[in-house]
Image (cartoon, rainbow, N blue to C red; front, top):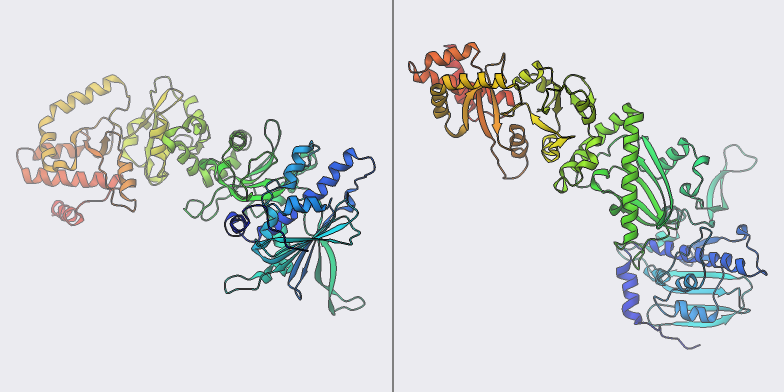
Length: 625
């Protein structure tokens, strides 16, 4: 029979299918299996309206037959088959989908949906095969047909004798090349892996004869290779099962089987939605962060399935960055996929699913915080920084959504507390939510700045993560209570104490002016402290940039350097102040010595680098001598 030309712009379109549309060659098997599943589905739908047909699911299957000698891979299905006209229309016109036509002409229900809708999936076979042969017989035809093509040059269709209804696709694999090993698609373990990865939840059994090493009958130590037919796929996905039938152990086993992590999940979320957009999802909140979680190498996203077929391993669009720790999968019948089924079009359905998933995750985290505080703290120690990044990122547009998930260490409770818990304990006269920043809780407890706040009995939140102060600056307030650093110039302490400090400052203006001249542009000002009780000196910062921010930003690996407006605060009630007064006007060198020593001591207390360590040690020696 004469060779027929494809009815599309074949060379160009087929080249696109083979070289551009699919990112990985192995997906050819996913496409052929999906088409086979569709063919069986079509018999199911036909049986609904044709009384002469009965549909017994046990009679329908898909089978893979690798043949290493002939270098062929055969995919057989017991589906509806194709007539000569359907071969012409479905395989003779690239990008003409018989499944799409069938779906448009029939009402799809009962949870069965047609997978292939683009008509290009079949041609993915040419990514691995030089020649493709299709043997088929339609349920509506007395005669079978053979379709053969070696690529874009065209195809032939010839009638054949065939008793069985269904389709057999034979791929004659390409010859191996230096970087391309096509023989791998004849290996049992490779085919099993591909089926497990992409087609594990196809609703019909995918069978293959598998070689197993077994103990020889009647012996104790002799083994032989036994070939037995095995079903490679699970068929019924866990997310399609009734929640009431599943146990926590079932979800944990699924978590391990999918290799979402080596830990145990703290919580699972099973979602079944049958509304405007239909989808199922199983999500997990992990116990531990992956080793690369806080690095650029980490790739967020959920597995995305369409009718049980894996479309994307990491669909990032389903999760906001601050919930990127969530593992799991989503399966939907309603997504608008692009032609390769590997990428999503950014459409309304996807956004609806992502919005619902976000809502469910937050609800579960709040429930975990309320019902199992210990588990929530375990979660927060692993992923709390990510929640804080969410508060800070995107100009704080998510801050109100995330603020109730935050935990900070409390100076009075000696444990992690929520902002809600902090505010509920605030005395009536307390104006602000106080916080202190430092490298550790132990260092913060020793900070001089905390003295007066702690003495008033006010609770202090300890910020030990680099992101903490940036996040709080973005949050600004919680339930109308502003955040205020213990290093701030205005602590909101009672007015009479402020007035007393102001008078003392005015009485010693000349001394502080002289100290400011000695330090130059190292500090913005020198003044009497309103916060110190037992310590002689402390640094505070005027403006939006705190001392901790200066330290963090300047430690980053770039050339950006910032400087906080530092204020050197002196405790006028400390004995060291009398030494400063004694040196003023009597020994200018000694005043300079004391001033520089106090400034460097204040830097050390804050964990900031001393600008000239040699000069500092020399000053110490002068005092000792």
